[in-house]
Structure formats: C-alpha cells, structure tokens
Length: 181
Image (tube, rainbow, N blue to C red; front, side, top):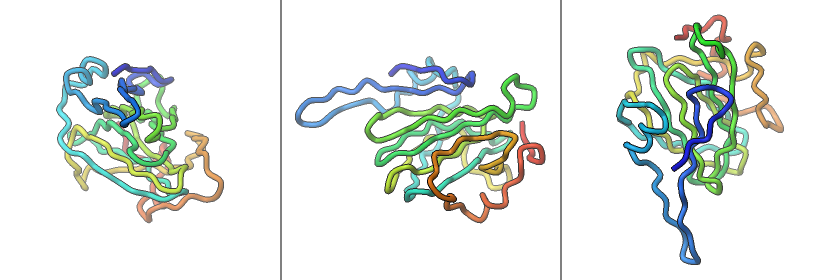
C-alpha cells in the first residue's frame, strides 16, 4: 500500500498493491501496521460500517466531537462516489478547506479522513457500496453535521440534479454555526 498526499495535510489517499491475472485479483485492503506507518494513526479501528446508496444520494458532512471523534478509512466495493473531507479544526491553517476524490470499485483507492475533519460523499454511479472503518464507536450524543452546500466551504459536488438527502443532513448547520474542534 502507498500513501498519496492530498491538498489537506493529514488526509491521505491510500492505494493498495493489486495482484491480478485472468482469474481475478488479490489485494490487502487493510494492514494495521502499514496503515499506522503511512497515516500516523495509532488508534485501532473499532467498527466497520457499510452503506449502499443510489445515484444522487449525498451523505454528509458528518463527524463526531471528542472524546468520540472518529477517523474514517473509506473505500468503495461496488460503484463510484465522490468523497469529501473538510478541515473543521478551528486553529488549523486549512480550517474550512476541503478535498474531494473519486473512489470506486475499479480504482480500489481508499481515503483516510482523520479526526478533526467532516466527511461526506455523493454517489456518481447507479449504486455504490461504501465500506469504512472507524477509530471510535458511533455515539449519538457526539454526532454532528455541517450543511453539504455551505457557501463558505464551496464544495464542487459533481451532481446533475439536487441531491437526495436525509432529514438530518437537510437541517445541518453552516460551518460558522456548527460545534467543531
């Protein structure tokens, strides 16, 4: 596995080595020691999540506050998404900045979204299955969100029409009103 830096420090794209032939392929999708070496994250992954969504669904921007802040290692096993991380660390030089990458079953890349970043994605294929590991358990009392289309952040989502949102995501506050790190 190799790490590819993004425009936001600490957010990494991870690309596995894939061994393939006419029978198919093999890859290590996660190796704890190698992941810790590449990401600098020493916390264990404690939970795997799996979501399936259809084209035009947008999930996010989500995060959890300390002490239940989550790092997320995101990958797609079917379909394609546009995956986004937003720096929500108030003292950071990149506060409010975002990075977006395409993750797909075809490119097999993963995105490491450390604690202190909000995360969201939109589905750009007919359907997508997204699997992500997290460093802290889900905690409803620490769960927060930021509006997906906050003009202060200015994410360029690759959407053809208005996204399908959950009621929670429709009501999410703007960054300047949100409780952040």
